[in-house]
Image (tube, rainbow, N blue to C red; front, side):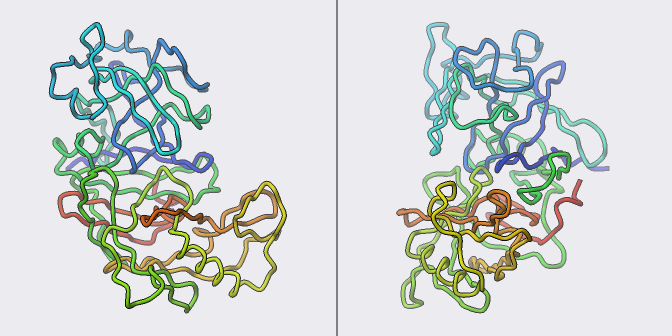
Length: 365
């Protein structure tokens, strides 16, 4: 029986935590599954400046398979930020758009995952960051980040060499799902998304290899189609959106966001909530029940992805549902993890496509 490596993934306060084990003996870590970055890292002992975490931190001195990477190794240059320490170790600094940052030592370790065959799968020599100085908006369940981007240092790229190609699939449970309910991510051969209802859109290659860029042509709110640029006469730039499991809301260029919000307001009979300082400028509605809103369709090149209200209207606080979108002055948008939930999504870096298949991810364990 062929083994497809798998990892549990569950919802956690707007992020999705993926479980894997590092070291010998294996030490469990729960990191944010992030398709928008490459580096996999966890907080490590000794921690000079770390955020609080509930679980013990990884102690590299207790693992027989931990090895630091030297400055003159090619692996030190997998990340552009690799620099030399006085001990000739490869130190790194990795910053995120959210202003979070991790600094530490680039090292290699053995990673252990489960598999479809029910056995453990070991991958030796995985490059990761042992973070000794980490700060940002992390909560105490998050022990680091699993970098699932498309660059050479990413977990996906490193897994691909040993398990049948650079590809993986994810099925994210809805945002409000109980933390005890989880789904799975699959890697390499056997993770392909196929069958009834699958739609696929091309990945767009750009200089930045990390994000998964796709092309959004427009959005339908109910039966009303809104072109990405406001007019079908305007040519849509390829790769105008990227899929990011590490960002909760979907972020749209302001000119498109404003039109989507106006059309949702037009189609929802209730009056929006206003003047609530907790909610900022979001479009929100006060209701004790799940809000009945319009279906939205994201028209990607070659793939229409339908979103139910559960994927677009998020319970912001008790009795309030908000549209899980926000705006940006950038021309490039982000397809966030709220919208990715309840879809089996396959990222195939070999074939350069992303595939979507509607699925109840709470039943994908």
